[in-house]
Length: 222
Ligand SMILES: O=C(O)CCC(=O)C(=O)O
Ligand SMILES: [Fe+2]
Image 1 (cartoon, rainbow, N blue to C red):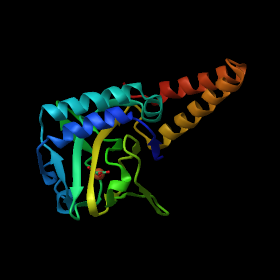
Image 2: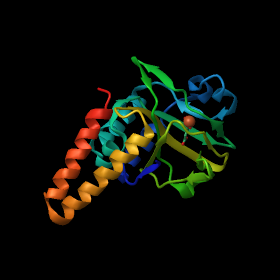
Image 3: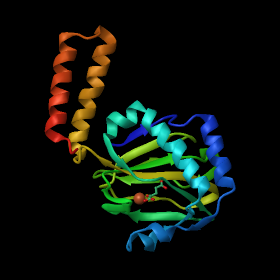
């Protein structure tokens, strides 16, 4: 299940973040890639710094407040965001993200996330391409919008042939480890919210909420 989060950030938040990015130092992205991904990772990443901490505060607050993010991912641990820049043919070839990542504590990567920060008309190329069994899906979203997708997929970022592509990426350990179970919960949650909007707290809403809560009890890691 690939879920777009339109307007995760306001225009002002994007502006603030891009201002912080403008004054930042970048280093070779290979430093944060797994040994096999390193071969195909040709981008740069913002160094650990005060501006990066500030960016992380803005982004983590935005995630906390975003209802769709929360009911689609059931976040347990959200890693600090990396800010990546691709320009001059920079790209990130096909790879699978590391299953485990280390920061203060070890977390499992169930869900990968890209927050788009550059306006899509300011660069060429740079599509995020996610492989699904039957086809590939391409994403290139408005500045301030994001995409969440299962970390179990092969994916890549195509070469940026003009301009520069700045994004913030993170990984989420979900309370619901299985993508299939997350999708069932997401569908039930979406349906019960829509029932509630139509008819208020009806019997059908109560029963669906009961089933949703009971599945959460069966499937959650806490
Ligand atoms: O830049 C992106 O949209 C995704 C980057 C990526 O796949 C990664 O950092 O593992
Ligand atoms: Fe990746």
